[in-house]
Image (tube, rainbow, N blue to C red):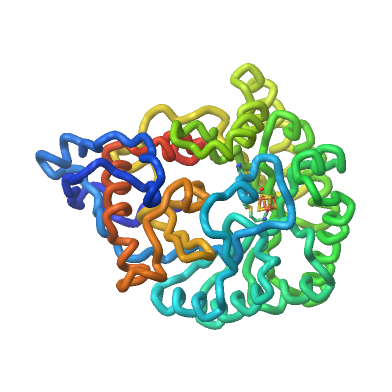
Length: 378
Ligand SMILES: C[S@@+](CC[C@H](N)C(=O)[O-])C[C@H]1O[C@@H](n2cnc3c(N)ncnc32)[C@H](O)[C@@H]1O
Ligand code: SF4
């Protein structure tokens, strides 16, 4: 993630007026504490942060909120908010409200290729000079869609591959066929090569206890298909918020069982070293996550800059604090379609301002405290 563009040394913190609550109406509070701004900000003004930043240059928009798969660690099939398909006109309205947008990640919680107008959305945004990227499970890639990936103006596509064998991959990515996804990866890379396309394709792996040993094999598989980058990420959340809706508890149990325990970190360090050597020999850019949580802040800025630097909208029009919140039943800044001020109204709404203040004070809601990004190990 990019560092906040605002100047940490010279901005102004407003004293938050109420306990931060990102919870949707009717939901329980997120176990939040009243944020206290850092002493320097409250008193001398030496460290402060803008609570009303301008709309960011990066946005993530969810085209469709449902999926054809049922990955074990993913909350998509349990989400309790409205599951929608974003109408094309609404998508254009959102773009119109962000004239300064430079980068769009066109995917949320769900499979973007399930949206019948996904590639039209890509084209519309790319025609405005916006760099467009997405993640996909790649299970729906027909030859026609492979061609659209390279001719629609898409800049980058991340392909989720949580294993290098059918047994491991299919035990995580339920309803998917490893053989078909590997075939589709070949199809995508062939279309890219034939078109002389610059589409950036990278693999993405969610690292867990049982798939970690397949990291070197995954590097080899990607290399064999001409993919030059792999992003390895940790589980996004331990889902430990006390107010977590009960329907998520089986996923929380899975996540707890599959997160890498402290005792296995030395073995993982060795695996990371081996994988770095292999990636370098194969010419693959490998991004590995931190193994241990960061305990201190590197500066007195917020540990997470999502609510300053990035904006997230679900297909139903909810502005979420970040992609890690995943769905509006876990946290929301409100509905941008019903707010008379649209995106600006929610970006500067009470919930957004309170979360920024809470992050600055390093006393965020439980949603953040259970997030791997906030803990510095995503
Ligand atoms: C939610 S998916 C949506 C896009 C598409 N369906 C896919 O699987 O790539 C986006 C990314 O989040 C990852 N993901 C899902 N659940 C996760 C979790 N609990 N922790 C970390 N990453 C997760 C997926 O593996 C995928 O790379
Ligand atoms: S990770 Fe992606 S493919 Fe898997 S269930 Fe979630 S949205 Fe679907």
